[in-house]
Image (cartoon, rainbow, N blue to C red; front, side, top):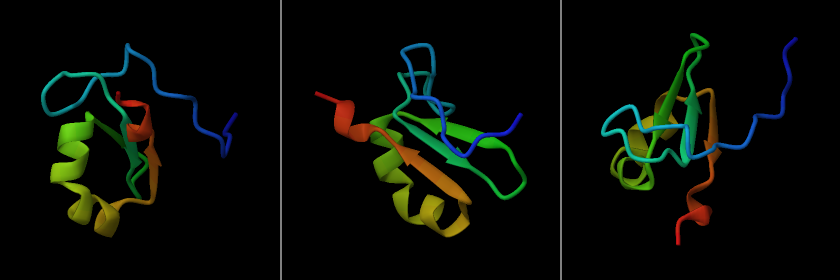
Amino acid sequence: MSTSVMDALTAADRCDRCGAQAYLRVTMPSGGELLFCAHHARAHQDKLQQVALKIQDETNRVS
């Protein structure tokens, strides 16, 4: 069953680039997902906004 509400990211969700805790989930038009830590989310923000179907940003949780 598909839902429009994404589950919250947890400590088990890891950045696809470096393995740190993920705070950003990017859904691609193909249906695939990418996870990024806050650092890599900021580093790739412009490009991700151009190619993403949906972005779930929880970087506000970083203290």
